[in-house]
Structures are given as C-alpha cells and as structure tokens.
Length: 452
Image 1 (tube, one colour):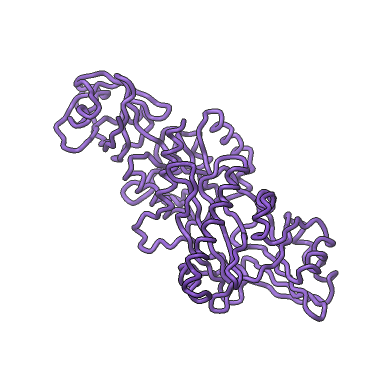
Image 2 (cartoon, rainbow, N blue to C red):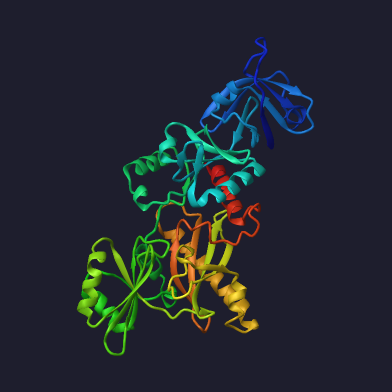
C-alpha cells in the first residue's frame, strides 16, 4: 500500500512527550491498516528509527514529527512531500530518495548550480508533486551526507539520506576521470545504487558503435581518427571539405572546417571562445603547420562535410531529446531545430545559434505533405540511435540528446550523440512550467528505485 503524505516538522516542547512519538492523520491509519499507539519502525534509504504513532484529526494525509526523528532519518528539517509505504506489520518506508550529482558553487549565502539550476528547480518541484525526496549534491558534499534541497524558492544546504538513485550531471570530463569520481561510482556499484547517465561518450566511441550497424552507415558522414597529416590530406582530397573535431569537445568549441579551393589553396575557418577565425593557406604543408600546435593538445577526428539544409541562408540541425520514463523504452520528449548564427557553421546556442520549432523550419524547405514523413524519419532514427547506444555502451543511459541534420532531399545525417544534453535547448515557454524532460527523469528514477 503506497500513500503520498506531507511531513510537517513540529518541535517538541513538552518534556513529558517523547521526541520519538509521531502524529499521523486518521486517514493514514485507515489506508495502511495501522494500530493506534503502535510502535513501528520507519525507514528512509539506509536509515531507520523506532517510533510510537498516534492519530490526529486531519483531513489531509499528514505526519507531524520532531526534529529528532528527522535527524535519525537524515531528512531535512523542512516541510516536504514524500511517499509512504507499509512493509509488513511493523515497518513503514518513506522514499524514494533521488540525488542529482553536479558541480555546486557556494558563494557566501548564494548557492549556484550553473546552467542546470532552473532545470533542477523543475525537478525539485515535480518531485514534491509525486512524493519523491530530491536533492542536488557534489562530490565534495556526498561523504558528509549533505546536499542541497529547494525550499521556499531557494537552495538550502541540508543533511540528506543516502541516495537510492543518482542522476549524473557532472559537466567536466576531467572530473569524471578523477580518482574521486571513480571511488564514488565504485561505492554506488557495491551498494547496487543505479546511476545514469553513466559517463560522457566521445565522438569516436559513438561512431564506432553506430558504424557496426550497416544500415546506419548511409546516415553517417565518413569519419576517421586524425593520426597524422596523411590522414587529413587523404580526407580533404576525397571530399574537398572536412571538419576536424576534438573527440571530447562540446558546445561547438575548437572545430575546424577546411575547404580545398579550385586553385588548390585551402580555406580554414574554426571556432574559438571569442568567435570564428578564417585563414587561407596556399599549400597543404602550410595548412597543417598552422594546425599542428592545436592538434597536439587533444585527440581529433576528421569528418566528411555534409551539405546541411539551410534556413534563411543559415545552416541548421535538429536536437531530439530521447529519454526513458517508467520503463526501459526510449521516447522523444523534445525536438527542436537549431539555426546557426550569421556566418557560423555550428548551431550551438553557446556559439550564438537560436532555437526554432521543427515545423517552422521544415515548412520553408519542403512541401506540406512531405513534412510528417520527415518528422517521423527524424524521430525513428533518433530512437534507434538511442537504443543502440544504450544497448552497447557500458553503464546505464536514460537521457540522450541526438543531433541530426537534413539535406535538401530530406535525408537525415547523424551528427552527434550527447550523453548530458544541455537544458537550455528545449522550448520551455513559460518558465514556471515543468518540462516533460524533467518529468521523464524523475519518473525513470522512480522506476529504477523499484527495481532495487
């Protein structure tokens, strides 16, 4: 029997009343078939406390308990909603407890969650609606049993129970490769705590997984690891235009585009933190020399340029957000078109791109009767890519951002797979609305908690 309840903190001032006596609405006694004045054990994640329960005349399902009880259960001393479940005759369980791992900045009294702060607020609000205890934590706070809970419009640092499910939103690939992160994930595995999305996938890793499926190769640009100047020379000779991308890159940074011109010179443009830089080289040797210092810093791939569909003479692509919800089935929860800013060849918002509705950009390029088929093709391809990645890569994945492009005939190309897609690339409209993608994450967390 499961019942959503509201826990209300009531300080115990009467010395004659036990701090381990809790008061429950009559409705809870009836629905859970509890005995009045009964001693019972309450569990939350790894924590438990023995209490005596007494009934109160409240129309809503409410529990009133002291801070002593909350301390034993490592619950924040705030008012929040959570699910209550009866286990046997003398045991109650509250939960599930969901933690989101990310980088947290504490500056005086201000707690910042960076680019996902608004999204985390949505997660917290929805968690409260469905009776899930949700908090955000960092690698620095995990072993202190501390996290950040969203109460009264602000994030507060609080004692929190051990998570029963973890959503990994660490932004730094370097942080994910640290010994501290490895120790953390090892502990979760030992304790059989499910966590997703497991880790970043690099561009080459994704390409190697997908190219094993022969029917997908027609949707993929030819790609190879840049191991030397001969590789780059051959790719340019074959395709006249190539991209050179860091395998661990994100947000469209440090991407080079090379065109071989009719006079055998080479036009190079590339993205930096400050914008784009364009140069012309009269020989391949000059071109390669100009790239050499940058290429030594990271591993790069060379990729065939695919002519992209344009919107108002600007390149565009499509971000489809694939998520699991209350099962292992992948679904599309968001689909948007991303239009490059003027004179840019990448469409990332971080590089000045803008979000458009999919139909809005398709109607400019195709007949109305073609659009449903193209939309279906995009969605089917994104779902298949998500299923293949999920079934092949190590770890649990439940959210993937699939970037696709179209040519002028409506044929899609797989550009990239993002294991931790940006939360600023969905059309949220009114900020007070909880996005479907936030609901999907919490629903899948509930699903995973029930499997353990």
